[in-house]
Image 1 (cartoon, rainbow, N blue to C red):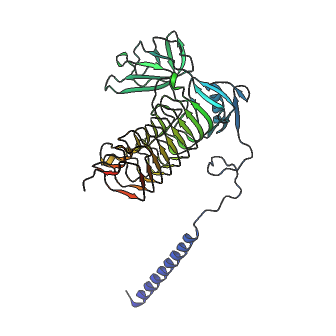
Image 2: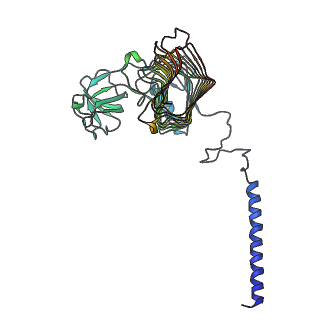
Image 3: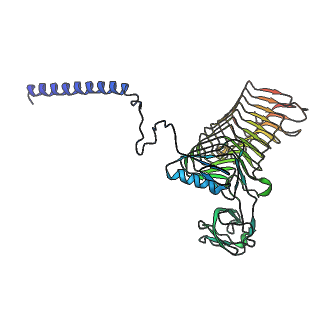
Length: 450
């Protein structure tokens, strides 16, 4: 290659490199400037656009009441008709007027539905339970059952079928609706998909969650009373039911709801994300006041009153990045319970009083990888917990990396053998900072090996 050719190639290379550097500088400048998209200043309703919506003066609302309203009725069928109507049109508000609604089945919500009451005089009450054993085997593919006593079972009723699984001895629980009957044979709305055999002591009972939804988003429940009629119904736990029971839902707000007297949980949500429960009163349940259930991410529980339950606030399995703030939690067997992989939660400014066994409990679980690590407990009051050997805050198992800061542990009775903080022998790193402990026989019992 000649010297002239070398010079030409050199110039071409330098020119290309200079152009690339210039383009890179322009690109960097553009990236620095392109921080945000243009703001939507004049939103319009556009087909398929759910991110931006105009602020309409009036929206779809259907009134339901026992004596007046666009739909008049006193049971779940009137409420369900309104829910289904607004759902068909893409969502809206079902406004329940004052009065008593007696429920023989669940009110089943749908996407983008707001169920709003008119205050403490809007009451959803569960009807007394009918119950009977099954007298004919039903296989998993069947869509009917045969009961010994059909009295109290009506078409449209919610029904829970339960038995002892003949293969492994565990419980089988199925929720269905009765849609037809002949004598003591009852047709269900769906197939069983589980065996209901007589050898498993199978039976049916009209048990169901009062307000429920599965695989839904953008729900709002507010300003009403839901009564589980505990005295007239058997127990159905919070993995299946509650005054409110949600499964696999997201973006939910429950506000100013009174959930009371249920033979199970008050408000339970399972594998539900971004659920906010505010200013609710959940009391006198056989189960849990609030039950953020398995796998639920980022729950917010703020300003609620949880009284006279088995457990006031129960973090189930894998509840993460949640906030429990400014709740009044009184007269429960356990005030707050945290356990199986419930990590990275903030429990702050709650008042936990007169718990029967433990004020705040971190459960032992199955080992270190299952424990509830990296939770912060800050500025709570735990007062007058349990009997003479009770513990205000008890950390069990191999739980670690907990932070307790600015909490007040008070015992206003005799000290007896009561303990403020107790850390089990296998617990790991725990940070204590500026906590105030008064009136206990032992302020802190640290059972870890030094």
